[in-house]
Length: 155
Image (spheres, rainbow, N blue to C red):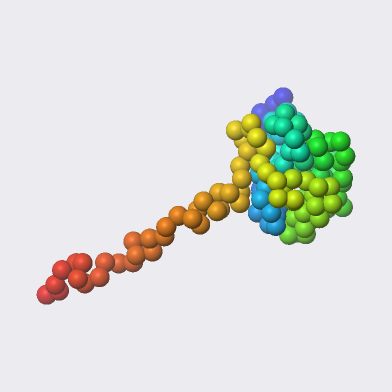
């Protein structure tokens, strides 16, 4: 494969990864992100596993190429549900569609179960990361200039 083709494919994956991240950030419940390393390499929104770590996950994403519509797999493909939405759809609307379908399908993330796929180094819990950032003590005083007393007397 010529280098230009590889560059084009990588660029397409990066664009779709960003689309998936924007949707994942708008999900109303905790989700994870995991790259599809055995297929399209595009990030997938992980909606949890219904059993052991070896069981296939519920997931949602958009594949590159023909069609480019959002889809949701229940238990790794036992049931696949295609949306009417493409990559250009409003991320909030796509997130609402995924949330609705995930709730109807009983996806663990939508029903309070674990969302991030276990056993994968690529999994990232967006909401968990946000929670840990928000739990950190803030030091806004370090952003302010020192007071006159801290600088010493003025001349």
